[in-house]
Image (cartoon, rainbow, N blue to C red; front, side, top):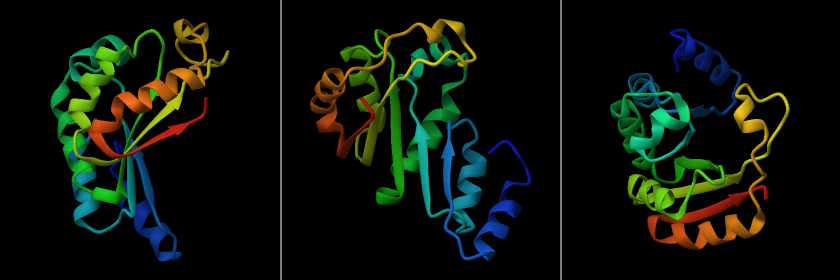
Length: 156
């Protein structure tokens, strides 16, 4: 969403008869809103990295306002919006997940996915974290059930 040519590129893709799903980190709600208003998106998936107060620690992103605004936009899309979190142990504690739950409350769909460490991750600190276990994902699925209509698990 940082590329000003994105709307034109999406129009070219749609002219081929293809549907468009946008994956976003939520830092540019203005572009997201413009694309939706123009009817260019069929689906949007947004990563919810952490509670808003923990974004700087995990991502370095310091301004929660655009993240909150994008969350509201995607949550308001109903079935065409997906919110998701990659679970990093020990960062995503139960308390952190409840804070995320309050952010996504009322969403149609929320997905948690297993973190898988890889040697090519840009931050060396993440390379040594453990893979998220299926048991942890199942426990979090139960914990998050009150916050969204559908709670999905990917990986594990």
